[in-house]
Length: 218
Image (tube, rainbow, N blue to C red; front, side):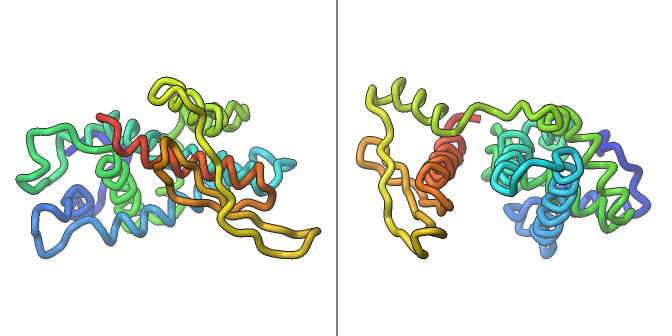
């Protein structure tokens, strides 16, 4: 088994966490992934809430989104050796696993740790395995603005900047919300809401980057 920083009282939980649905087994790791995702959100949100008492909700959300992103979780999962130990179906064997699969393995293992040792044990596991990204956000060194990242991507790929399209507006003048989608070369990406148009554009850029990141070679 991989050198995860937790000694399982019930090793079958770790085995289940590493069993991907592609195996066709009667039980796989999807329920543990669901649980681990919720535990991860709580632990990271709590860390950020305590470390940044003056930061508004929108910026806390942005920091959390980076920490729990597929890219970060996939890198951590690979560092833990989960790829080599995962139980996979024939379609996923002998190939580099997508970031989405690696991130899901991490979440499933975290869910297993939670069941095996409780919330404080899961918190310790998350803090240990996410030490570097958590330290980065403690210092408030966020990744580049998603709009800037998407702009650079477009300049390299198409030579044209992304277009942000307002799809919907709701609320009164003092409390409006905007639904915005990014478009690149006529391709529209998933939309996102924001309390200002600028905030909505930032989240729309983030949604586009998630799709592009998933499509990129691992």
